[in-house]
Length: 151
Image (tube, rainbow, N blue to C red; front, side):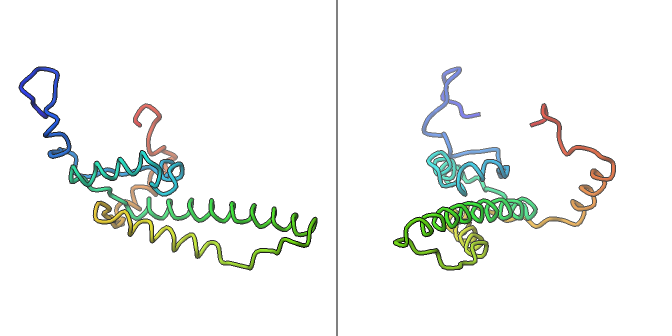
């Protein structure tokens, strides 16, 4: 608790200097909606994590899910742009088709670059074989990982 000496108030000089939180894990849907944590709220969030010395933990399985979602989304967008340009090319010869590009490889490279730019606040966490076993048991038992009220 950050104590200012006045009940119900915190000392603003202490905000962010002390935290009982060691790490934060972000769900994939947040990453999807923030374009790899690049929107203004995410940048503020990352600033706070650095200031409060809290790590952004990235478990291996979550990173795999992040990469998969990001690559898929970028590939879909590139396909839409390419299709639109193809239609414009058919209508008017002024437009030239896009060259063939490995969109998925570019998206993976951009993803790795973004993680590098997040910097030292990011800590990758290896996925323990025990975690795989526990997840497998949950699937076999048809058990949901969490319930809506648990989140």
